View 1 (cartoon, rainbow, N blue to C red):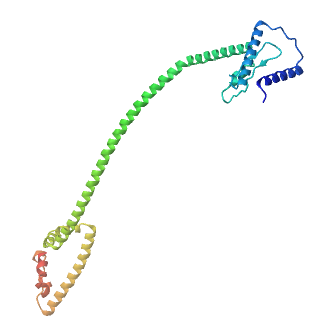
View 2 (cartoon, helix red, strand yellow):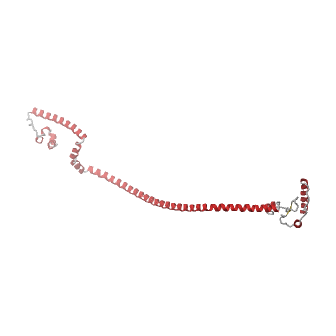
View 3 (cartoon, one colour):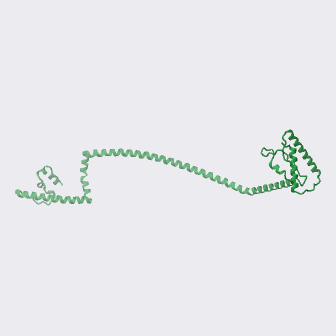
Length: 291
């Protein structure tokens, strides 16, 4: 296994060989006191890292960068960088390749951009604050209107539910009354049928019918159907009476009996001679005279 010191020497020699092939050699400038102090500090860090690796202890990640030579940039990589387990931050690792002046300019520009962006956002929020306040007030007013409308609708629904309950109660009472009325109607129909049958079979029905017969006949005779029937029956009765009168007169002439005297008053007319003995026994002559 290659040690940390050998790996460092190999990396430096390889970087110098590649840079010597790609770039022309440049004159080495004189090192200042600050650069010498930085190099000394780097050597101390490297020696401490070597000692830690040799002793088997885990060293903290190194981020030192050497910018003393403008031709080469030397970066002190960690011994075993691991970005997955949190041993080293990728952002800080990549920032170590940027020179300090550029890093300061980038940080300053980022700060200015952040400040300008923050001021822009604050200004936008400040400009939109009245609109947001107005919108919030509108939302509050609309919420109050909605709550009032909801309360009114709830009261209306409660009133409708009360009316519906009253209507259902009335319908229920109407159904009960209808059922009771139907039951009473069926009972009355049954009683009426029995009463009618009993009245029709009783002597009172015959008396009532005979007492109202004359009135019913007079009323019926005034109808067209009654008048036609009376006219027809009158003609038939007249023909029958005329035939009977001829038979009676012929019989009296044959027997030598006296003919009845002419009578112009219907009340004084005696119609008993026109009925036979059986009809006289049944009271036909009396009914005819009475009529």
